[in-house]
Length: 507
Image (cartoon, rainbow, N blue to C red; front, side, top):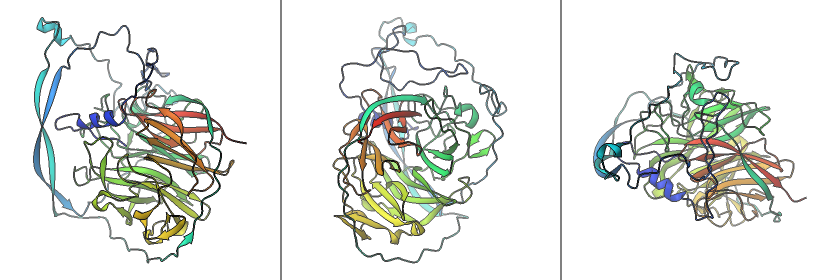
């Protein structure tokens, strides 16, 4: 879940994430190592907290420039209703047998090395160059709805369903799983990755990497805000860097011990990953649409997502319009946003804005948090046949499954959580939950015998002491009770990494 940089002035949102994911005090970073290099000799990113390169020149005492933002309101017409999303799709050409060969040289050439630039401070004749003061206007859109043109077809609302209150007792507490080790397996996306997503699908910078099994032997992997050519290290890219709100990849790779191989991505043109769920890309109206989980019921695929109104300058916060559901009947190529399966964010207090949804037994369980990173976890359930009927959902409130009680849901655990990922492990018959605890600066694991708990105390998997500005933590569906594979995003490199936790579950 990225916080979009302000392309009209400052890197204010980058500062926001730096604050929420700041590195806590520690004994010291690890020794410097050169960044990883893939089989093609391309340099990737190392998300580990390390000492600086001893051969690098010393950092400047003062920054080269100081930006002073000036807020500038701007009336912005917004045609309504939303126009139809462009669902142009093309089949992927077979990837070359040689992984280092560019599959689409007509789309993008292999970049030339950048020439070294002279040190600006040397030209001043001074040992310490004073920073430049820059006044940067920061546009603040004020959306004004205006009549638009063609829109998506209006969907018929489902018949309301009235569910009774049913008991939902918690299960006996389970013994917490011990974590023997956690290691970084490989960089999944971006320049220098084994998948070479920058050259194959114009995915230079992206985050999240949510998994679900679309069919036996195949997983989908959906990413958040994605940028192509023009993206630069240091967080999310600008609006002009081939910005797509979300993209989707497929993998059949079952051996995750050496990384995950992406077989293909949904494309709208040759070697270009398509945007699945459209967004208006207008701050204070709808900045972007971010997937939060995926699942399959039969041949229909589902995505939960959040419609982001704007990213906040308050650390770890953003405001959503609503949390919603979308579905696909063509294997994930094109998607339809359901117009009625939406959880509105009235006054910013909606409890199910960022959802992780998991089918199990007769139900789909929805674990949800409010917008931002300081909310608590609530729980709901719905029968599989009614997953798109919001009136059929029951919310777990003080030991009962209650209808129409979304904002009364009882918190499942103490403390704050964000970016949830949940799965049911068939082998151990236990539930696994991974999420970012931004207060503790850790991605953690909890387990339980029932979705409503009792959940164990949190067990740390990843610390921002070791991986600065890490977030996410999305479980691969082919994980086991012993081997937990999950994706982690890192803000500065703005790419996705595969992690492996070796667990020692209680016998």
